[in-house]
Amino acid sequence: MKAYFTYFKLKFITGLQYRSAAWAGIATQFFFGFVYIMVYIAFYESGGDNLPMELPQVVTYLWLNQALLALVNQFSRDQELFKLIREGGISYELARPKNLYFMWYFKVIGQRLADVTLRFFPLVLVTSLLPYPYHFGLPFSLPHFLLFLLSLGMGTLLVAALTVFYPIITLLTMNEKGIVNFFITMADILSGIVVPIPFFPKFLQILSSCLPFQYISDLPFRLYVGNLSLQEGVIGIFLQFFWVVFLIFLGNCLMKKNLTRVVVQGG
Amino acid sequence: MKIYLKSLAMHLKGELEYRVNFILSFLSQILVFFTYYFVILALFTKFDHIKGFSLYEVLLCFSIIQFGFSFNEVFARGIDRFDRLIIEGGFDRLLLRPRNIILQVLCSDSDFVKVSRLIQAIIVLLVAVFHLPITWNFWKVLTLILMLFSACAIFFSIFLAAASYCFFTVQGLEVRNVFTDGGKHMAQYPIGVFSKGFVFFFTFIIPYAFVNYYPLLYFLGRKESIFYALSPLLVFLYIIPSILLFYWGMKRYTSVGS
Image (tube, rainbow over all chains, first blue to last red; front, top):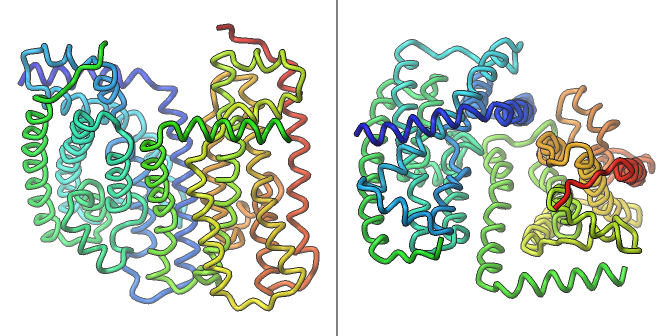
């Protein structure tokens, strides 16, 4: 366990070095946050019936999305892991007397936590000072906030399990395009990062509730803004737990299977 | 022009050598495009209109911007990826040749996978136009064509201006995304729906509004003045400072070696 934690720490500390990249990221995310929010404001000013969320809730949701993007997004894949596979570095990894899956898993978490640590605070600080309608709001209630924290933690474990999944598939296909791109694009839509889940048509809401993607960020964010009841939140966290265990188990099995057939391409 | 067409043909041949890869990337691009499109579709299931613009009107707006953007991704890829030419020193080689330098940069790269987006944009455009009650006349057709051309022109100018910036910073510029992707995202909707400051910015600083807002108003019959129909022509003026900027940057270019 200690060895895995070291991997995490290593990635986390190196990740914290890339501060100027983070500033550029913050500026871009700030701008995009504005753009997305303005679209919603325009829609809300036009009016509509049965809107699933109130405007301040949507705005806070979108800011959370931007502030935590580095942690919860599913479109950035861990290039380093793909490179290991492409360039044969995986043979070194296999020589180490540890479980490869968990080495990768903790690296991914370390990287994501480092990225988000650098970006989160400036964005939250500035956006919570903005006037209405751009204001980043406080959590709905204390219990909601606590559940938000818990489910965000679980969401992190979940997104890491999914991120490790893609290189494992690549072990077999050798090409990270094609199928992996397909997965990532699907995940992108169904996670609610593009549009919050409550705005989906009904059948897509049902579909996405059967898949793991919406439990990464949509669940915690909706808890934060109070769009979900505490009860729904607790059920959601159980589902998160199920998906984490299931995906780690599945990933481990798949990795064992794929490693028996792995071909090291020089290196 | 002949040289450019020849280089396009060669890039296409090159890409088709990896046929499976090409087809897979082509398909995944269709999906990526669909995610953009999905945002609009999903939001219109909950809202009837955005400041008086209906779904098909927004889709028309969206398809014009996407058309211009993907057109440049395919045919002006060399300018889009200009920082690579500088970093790898390939630009020195181009300077030695006795041809127009911008033409050579255009010839240096192209990305045919993005043709899939171009096709999709045209399909969305056609669907939108057929669903809109438009009384066609000569000016309407002209407006539509001008909108498409000016969409290509605006992204060409932005790409070129961003490329000029590489002369100074060597590295590509992340702020660039704000103008291309961010602007693109906003211009998917009729720009008039946003707050005044943004409309001003995207009218006078980066003229997205002349691409698909003012002419759109004419096209949909909301404005009668012919100036609205011809406003995309102003966008073409925008190319001039971009070209000047490029040549000005080139004068100060120092090779990074390699």
